[in-house]
Length: 66
Image 1 (tube, rainbow, N blue to C red):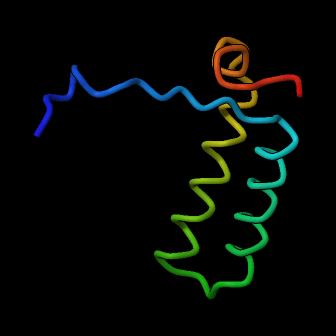
Image 2 (image 1 turned 60 degrees about the horizontal axis):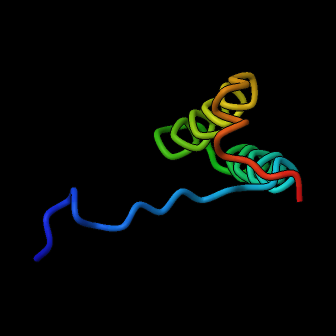
Image 3 (image 1 turned 30 degrees about the vertical axis):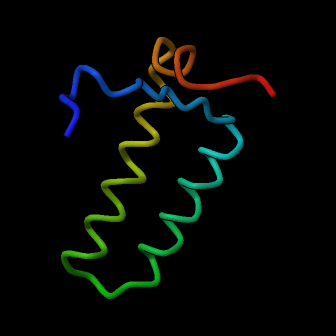
């Protein structure tokens, strides 16, 4: 098994529109689930995505214009 430092680095570039749609989808799903752990986990994912949108350096490094 190769060591972690020898694995090729795969930096994915995302479209901002796709990330916004993903956040919407996760939030809509969370609203359809009864209150509890699963709902909270999905809401936290949506909140994390919203925070990433505010981080300009992360957006510059992980998104593409196309």
